[in-house]
Image (cartoon, rainbow, N blue to C red; front, side):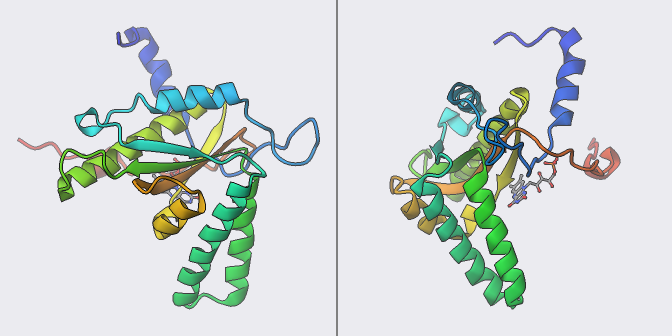
Length: 213
Ligand SMILES: Cc1cc2nc3c(=O)[nH]c(=O)nc-3n(C[C@H](O)[C@H](O)[C@H](O)COP(=O)(O)O)c2cc1C
């Protein structure tokens, strides 16, 4: 594909730098309750763009499971992920009140997000079952997640990458009745932004870049 002409580069950098994690979504203006729905055509465009991400050996190991709002799948996902969260917080000695608060907020977020995408890796999409190949596959899925977030941003949506499924991969797969080869990696919530996150502090370039001779 031909790269955009240089005069567009500034716009593209500004766009890329303006993406932020969004955790609050606009309410549905027609009902005043629930959250503003995202048209199916927009979700599809975003998913198509996500599949343009680079992947090791072009194996495209990403798989996406969409769970619509108010679906039984959302309920099962909420149940599964909060059970794992309770187990882990209890093991870490968190106070009961804190656990309950966190679980209630997690259930609400899972049930209310206008779009919920569970991003998985197909464990068979590797050249060889070697550690390096598996890392490459996970890195490739992460690229799709980033493309997905940026494509959502281009549509005026906000999103948040959620790592919870990593703590209950098999339970999450079973809860959504996904193929045995789909390994949950992350969950992404999308919706129309209802917050402006505070500015974030970036590490200075000198701290993260070294020039080697
Ligand atoms: C691998 C990964 C896992 C993340 N997991 C979570 C999460 O579980 N919950 C959450 O609220 N944000 C999560 N985030 C979002 C980060 O907190 C966020 O990207 C970071 O604070 C920088 O803020 P920004 O996205 O607004 O630039 C995750 C991001 C990545 C890349």
